[in-house]
Length: 369
Ligand SMILES: Nc1ncnc2c1ncn2[C@@H]1O[C@H](COP(=O)(O)OP(=O)(O)OP(=O)(O)O)[C@@H](O)[C@H]1O
Ligand SMILES: [Mg+2]
Image 1 (tube, rainbow, N blue to C red):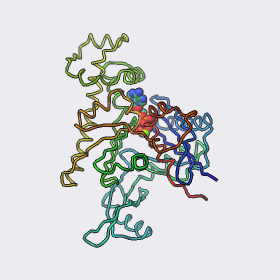
Image 2 (image 1 turned 135 degrees about the vertical axis):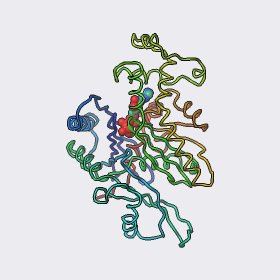
Image 3 (image 1 turned 90 degrees about the vertical axis):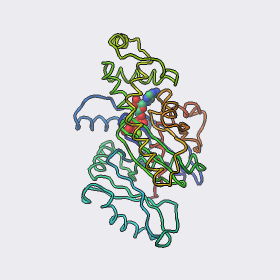
Image 4 (image 1 turned 180 degrees about the vertical axis):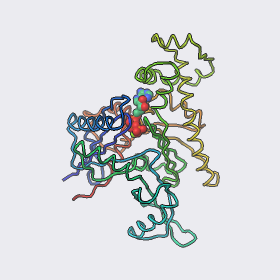
């Protein structure tokens, strides 16, 4: 019987699920579901309760199959590093990873859960044939908190993955020919994941805690509105195309007044978004420079955008100007079969980038028990 899996991403803004049927050599999309987590300044425990309720609601509203669920964690606290090891068995890798982890992970070893992923990459090194392994270290409390949320919502996941690796898996499936000098950027609400590819494999993986939330927060501060209004302004107007940049913009009181009265000056919104993205752009440029310095000057050639913030109007053009590179938006479902009656192709093209990570979790090969 064809196997059904669900990828469940508990993001900062929304919970997302992708239900897939795994066939012999293909996948079929069954369901896409997304529910936002109501934003309120609750304390930690209250917020957990709200998230649990959102997960439960999503499952019952969309009748999500909870038999085989894969979920995952992300953010700056998740450490992902690429290491090279001599060719060895899986058992030996686990041992070697444990040894090496102390050099890469800034927490005491009792506090972390370790994992690894062997990349399909072999080469001749100084000590004979070598292979590349991705080492993952996550604080035990991060995993435990995530498992607690899922279990309280009635979900026992079959595996816990890492957002960045899920992102890479989706890109690899949908763009098998693009292997070198590619930057995949998943810009969500709280986190931006940066995955830089070399010879078809991740060379550098990083999460930065700056994304859509920071844009909205800056907007709310600069124009003196509530977070909800700032969010609406951000989504409605986004960035003006390049010509808007040359026009002068004044941050004077009159413009603020206009904004508050509901007449939004597009150039002001544009200016605030640009300003709020400066630090993130700088982090991206640093990562590109590091990549290039480690690869004898070979540069990043192309950027692929994913995540909810990829829907910000003109963000592709903005990043293309800032980084001096072509930017395209990911099509995560490019190699997934679906009924066009159930999912309109233009709907999938629009919302698809929000489901990349959840899709990556659903692709995870869960062993039959
Ligand atoms: N049309 C739009 N224009 C601008 N921003 C948008 C639009 N639609 C969604 N967003 C932004 O996308 C972000 C949510 O994206 P996403 O669903 O990928 O985040 P998340 O997975 O919940 O968060 P994270 O992965 O960071 O924990 C929010 O910041 C939201 O404001
Ligand atoms: Mg996300």
